[in-house]
Each structure stands twice: as structure tokens, then as C-alpha cells.
Length: 120
Image (tube, rainbow, N blue to C red; front, top):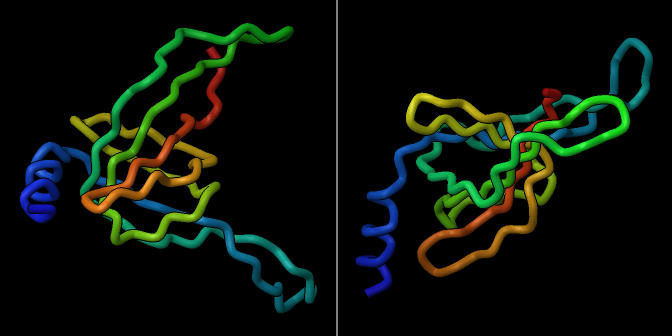
């Protein structure tokens, strides 16, 4: 029965995503620890759902765009909290940062996302 639900849910997934994290490495020239982006997964089928759509949020200096989304993706992927996730769905690409703690179900997982900060 779970496989039927999983199949039905995944038929709705029209997007693809790439999941990246930061990893530490030692710079050979300086012997200092630095960070670089490491891709964990790419072109993974998914779907995003928009929860909060606001034009801007007030700040003292400029208005910041605010948008909250939920990523629906297979539960077989281990996505750490704080990952960078780039999603392309219906021809629109969104770069999200600071992914939240995944809610894992038997058929899929749901991950809260925040769109990368942009200024209006």
C-alpha cells in the first residue's frame, strides 16, 4: 500500500533539485582550513509548494523579498539541515538557503526552505 501512495505522490513532482553543503578542506598553500561547496545530489525529482508569499519585508534600509516554501523529495535522500538547495520547477529556478529540519514520512520527506536573500 505504501508503494502505491509513494508512486501517486511522485507523479506530482515536476521539479528537479540540486543539494549542496559546505565542507572543510585544508588549503595546501596556506595550511589553513577553508570551506567549499560540495554537491550531494543533483537532478533529483522533487516538488516545491509555496507557503508564504510576501512582496517585501520592511527593514531600516531596503525592502527584502520574503518567500517560504516546502520541498517534497524522496525519503531515501539524506539532506542535512542548513543545506543549499536549488530547485527548477515549471521553468523557474529558485536558489534556497538554510534548509530546515526534514519531516520524514514513509513515502517522502518535506523540508522547509527559505529563498536566498534578495533585495527589492
